[in-house]
Length: 332
Image (tube, rainbow, N blue to C red; front, side):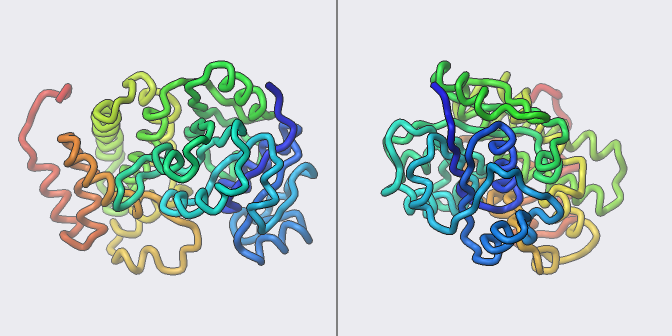
């Protein structure tokens, strides 16, 4: 199976970076953007000034405002924010050709339904051929060709191999997996945990606390993913541990920067004010807390973040609560 054209749905920073990757890979790429100013910027200047300034797009990349224009593409990358995936894919459904792979690149859990992104896609395009792309990857790094490795999860081994080859580009290296749930669960929780790490940094609690939070957060991520039916080995890879380390280690992460502002004393409203890009952890935290409770999984860090974001408690109170939890085995 070979791919010659790619359609990328969503022209935020990550969607634009992935369009750059498919362009470098030699695929004629059509990037769909909702915002008229983004369409104009890319058409006129070859740069997405709103979401990925300073990056000139490859000549293989073109832009369109119309989802219908992607109907003829051999491969679709779906990159809207997680909470908008349902409406976006429902709009694309009339233009979908059965058999064309849809690679889900959105990370999160849908609020209200508590669905993973693969479940949302199955409800909007029931006959979709699906794969999941997830891993430690900042859009700014990827769009400039800096070395990046990600997980590409696909249950069909032959299709996965073909997609891996199609999405491989200089500096961008996909590693193949078959565990879609593991790839999704890691990507959903890491954003919530990154807010917690930002709070630790903002409060000046030190690198030891930061390292401990990442490690205990990874334990939460693993418990949560396994309860959903994932393999622990998948979560220990790029799409889980790798993505967690990246997102929790740099203010370049929208989620960590949100936590940093909260830790420094800003309110949630102040921290979010003026932000055009979405901090997925803010949207996913309530769904993670609710789904973990439904699964009977203990996720104290994620629960604490959700409570702070909802205004139910304060940063200082949740820090005190976490530090006063009963001592127990590290394996629990």
